Image (cartoon, rainbow over all chains, first blue to last red; front, top):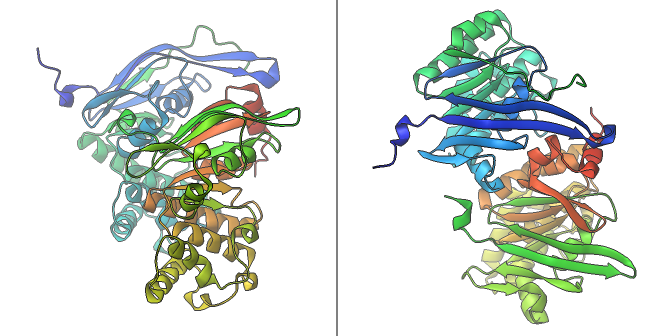
Length: 242
Length: 261
């Protein structure tokens, strides 16, 4: 029996994932958020997480990214055709997976102050070894696609509007060509025109085989990008403390 | 490549150090891999600077080992090296960036001589080559090359810190120890230095042990984090994981005490 063809493996496979928070300063109150959750995302799929606010959609994305530490369960990522479980992987292996396979686009931009926008967007490519001038060219093309005025590229994004910052974040998230992307409300601060640009970007990424797991509160956006909806189960141990 | 395939550059094992009745370090162990930036955070008195000084051989611990893997793959305990061997290593393979640049620079010689010193310690003798490399490094740390013959005392604090970094990196060290490298600087200067350090570390593939009490600096520079309290490591892991999902009560307190802007 030969091992399964890596091309046919799911890009992301979550098995029995659980996550709770213990808040020591508040009498060690315990919040269970994810309870034995399982989910697979295949190449070219865009799975939309569905459920009311507070049910743990963002927590799930952060746990998959290993930004939150899973308490139980497995997070299998197809990394260069080899499965790796981020729930137990060494930190430097997690960083390698994030650099080359798994991207995460959060709602907010966290960067070093005073660094110009073009450099921020080009950084993921440079970290993968692409020459700075080439990385800058790709960054410029991505910012142009997202309609960010060229006059802003040399400026640091701290003073930009919410919608402009969000587009910088999206450009930075899509530029590295990650095979798996986690999207946390990527269009929340955008007007209709820019929303349409991002929708096009996501649909194109889908067509090239990128696997995506995301939160899209905006119903038309969700219908335009999602291939499937995953209803978030309510964790059994979830209290009303939140 | 799996992390298991590469051996660590540095292995600190069971370091213990007392000052009188107080334990400054209590059985501290960690490993550092090539290209990794490890931040050690904690409040004043938690033992983080003592840990850095033990690795650099400036403080002698009561127990423990500091295994350093030379380029030829052989690991040696830095604590049992002869003084001459340790000094040679500290001038070539290892760097130390002090919080106060005046502690790491020679103020009586020019900027160019400060950079050239480690090259000469490593055997360089050709004046033209040394000067060319000093000029190159001034540019890399964004200091006007025309200032090469100026004394460091005429530089601003931010420039002095960048000069100290150039002085350390010119000999292509594999491991640099940094003690609050942005600590004494204005925030405007701090941001630029952080950006520079991040670029240099990424380009060179340098390994860094960074001591800081500033969690923001740790987040921007470090891949991994050790949290220390009363001389012990109480939590460690991926930087963003420890800061965004702290498990230990003390780490939760540290993170929740940071002012949000």
